[in-house]
Image (cartoon, rainbow, N blue to C red; front, side, top):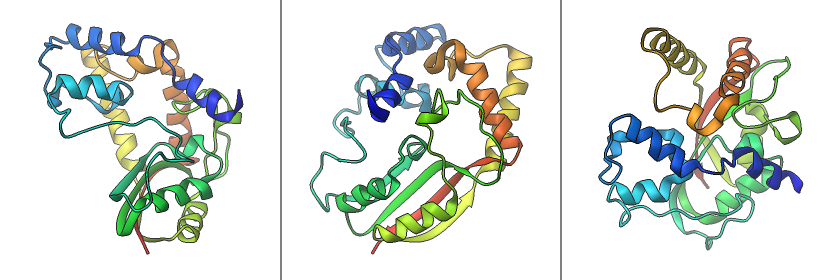
Length: 219
């Protein structure tokens, strides 16, 4: 099947759109007339359907393709973002090279990935990988060097570990007070959600990984 096939299988739900719509209905939302404020970042896998229901299809479109062979012409975009993708791609040089190819000169490139910040073992499954063979977590130095080699100038970088831990604590407190949310990561991850989240939080608290933000610009 190959790495890309394994990664796709990891994220495949089977009935994700129905699961999301059922959860929205249970939360008291009118799925025929959704508003942007009704949605959260977990639902990007059904982005087209939700965008249509939000009445934004004239402003937003989605294309499926490989990050290593983007289906766009060179110098097409003024800006691009990469959010929690690099952990599933071993060939980051090609990944960043493709991003540079489709961006215009002086375009912004924002990266938000889980990076390794210390020694230690990452236990699996995690939200991005069922096993170590499909996980490719690198350190900030690797990202910095490969971005530079690909034609980017890194302008800023920062760890978001404290923000992630604060959010996790808030989620735990809300769950203890109000019970499990109707809408949440469990809609996407299914029954393995508690284990996947526990593993990633353990690595985060142990100083092994950290969500990291990088802002770069094409040269």
